[in-house]
Length: 438
Ligand SMILES: Cc1cc2nc3c(=O)[nH]c(=O)nc-3n(C[C@H](O)[C@H](O)[C@H](O)COP(=O)(O)OP(=O)(O)OC[C@H]3O[C@@H](n4cnc5c(N)ncnc54)[C@H](O)[C@@H]3O)c2cc1C
Image (cartoon, rainbow, N blue to C red; front, top):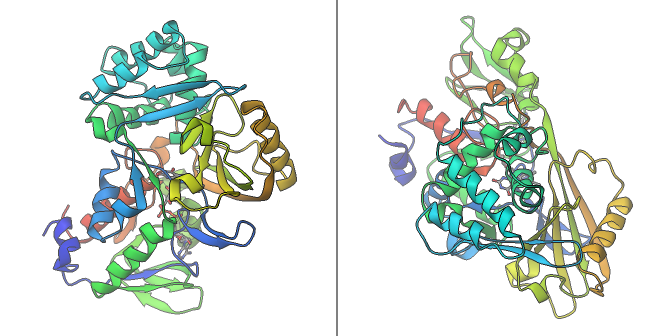
């Protein structure tokens, strides 16, 4: 049996599947909820997909998620960065085969001098093997220096990209992880680099269809059922899970898909000394702060964009949620703001963040005239693991040192940064092993 057959209704090879989830609702770090301040169903943060999220798209198709109605995919990669004062830098990749589409897009980038565009293009050419690949110890900053990238092209292209895909500061983030994304996104097909923006709440896309699918195949999903410990038999093999309620569940295979700190809390004392788990304990977290503001008029309307990046601002990306979802009314506009790798802001008071928001809007869109009607801050202190240089080797493989225990979650060793795609790939890897397909 192939994994695709398990999805296609062949069942789980006679395995009984039981999912226990600590929270009352599903979704984890990709969830939505009704927010009293904005009066809307909002996400815990803006979640983008890329055309190269192959595992995710296959997963969504298998569980019959409403991909076409719920996710807007660009026809070709296009990005707009706004500079203080309101001028823009526009990258629009034409319909050429990869990587020519990117080369042409970079060369024609509007708002950036030729010298800087040529420097970005040179990096693209070198990426194809003319320079030594970075190892996990090299930072993005060092790698960009090695590629002679100008300050302007770093600020307008590389740094926003690095904050977005690695959720970390280019000064510390791993260049190897960045290159893993660049290769997938830009070196395969033109479609791979397109961005997909969810139009509907994340729970409608990922959670509802996944739960329905598991139940339709005879599996069980239990919410509000936190696991307390992993149980081993006398030979040190997995024997089951004990829930916080005290209930014991027997199992010959357990797949954990919890974040690192939650896994460590569940391990038997002796196992925490194993090198693999000692490395897990050394993984650090990187936060994301999302701001949700209701304005009395759209800010991005005049630019005719669903979202823009801000050059060298503490606020990285602005999303016109009403334009994206087609909701909203004549005199309100819901704007979402992403602050990635938000170590500098995650402890700030919402009032201080509101002040920064208002100041930055004025700096980038002078004279915009919009007033803030409501303001909401969503802080995710452990949004992803940190992808600081040297981290990758600490991410554990799917097969753990405990027989019968398989590790999943965006942070395990998938070859790519901790993203939805990594989470889904890790799940597929673990399921394949559990079903004896690998
Ligand atoms: C604000 C924000 C923006 C992001 N933006 C993007 C983006 O644009 N694109 C992208 O690809 N990725 C993005 N990500 C990353 C993405 O959300 C994660 O990679 C993904 O959700 C990880 O999924 P996961 O299943 O591995 O972990 P989680 O979503 O963390 O799921 C783990 C689950 O385990 C449960 N759990 C924990 N402890 C226990 C226990 N003891 N017993 C039972 N259950 C337990 C939790 O409740 C949770 O539901 C973003 C993340 C955040 C926070």
